Image (cartoon, rainbow, N blue to C red; front, top):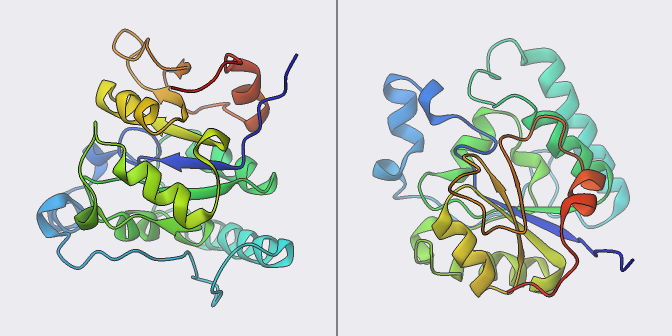
Length: 209
């Protein structure tokens, strides 16, 4: 059977990795769309890095992120959905490039608040792209990562997100209500237990689109 080539995961955030229902008061307002006026495209560089391509850099940033969780994990996994950290760590260990394609929040604030910012190679600026079902955010992320769309997996949680993935020529992993997400290439209720191997096993081998 043909092996699916996956080099990057392009991920929306709320409802997949992060729960907006667990944000409260000012914290919620700060990271949502209403206050995203200074969001910018950026590379994950919390560890003082300018990029994550070299394997030694990836390992170093991974260790920094792990240390962050060990030291402050008690206060911030509130927003992090069950299984999200293990899922991202599995992708990271396998050298999968990560990009945030969220357009309904300030992604750099969201990722920083849950300790995942340094594990993302690219963050799409929500102000520079059209919202789904337009594929612009996905295509911009793939272009900036230097990876062909057919080697990217779009991780979405709405029918509009699935439509955007198909328009971008990408396979789509949908997370959430399976009755609404049946047109995706693969759908799961949440990311608990999700791994790169499980994604490869679950995706139907066919041209994306």
